[in-house]
Image 1 (cartoon, one colour):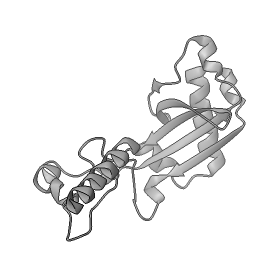
Image 2 (image 1 turned 45 degrees about the horizontal axis):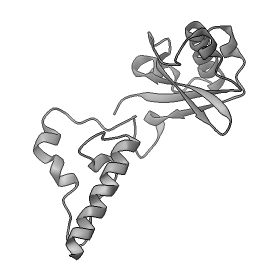
Image 3 (image 1 turned 90 degrees about the vertical axis):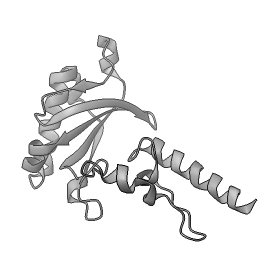
Image 4 (image 1 turned 60 degrees about the vertical axis):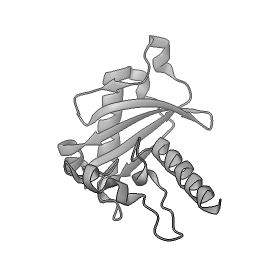
Length: 160
C-alpha cells in the first residue's frame, strides 16, 4: 500500500469556477499531486492527495505544517482565494492500522489474474461483497456498489 493521505479544504463558494477552472489539477507533489472538487452540506470542497515521498515527509509533521503546505499548493493551483477556507480535514491512510496505506489495495503483477476470483467465490452460504471483491473499480465506491449488487444476485440465484 502506498504512503497516501487525503486533504480536503471546505469553501463557501467554488471561487475557482469564476476563473474557468474545474477544480482538478495534476500537480508536482509539493505536497499535493492531484486535486478534485466536490460539494457536501452547502460547502464546496477542494480535495487533494498527498503521496509517496511528500507523504512520508509529512506523516509525523505537525498537522499545521501539512495544512499550510496543502493550502499553499491550492493557492498555487487556484489563486489567493484558496487561503479563505472554512474548515479542513486530513486522513492519513498509511498511518491507519487496518489498511496501512491507500487509497486502494495494490498487488504485485499476476496476483489478481491468478487468484482474483477467489476473493468473491462463495463459501457455503457466505457470499463476499466489498470494494476489494469487485471485478471493476476495485477500491472505489463504484466497485463497492457493483460487488454488493453481484453478491445480492448470487444470493437470489441460490434461492431459486
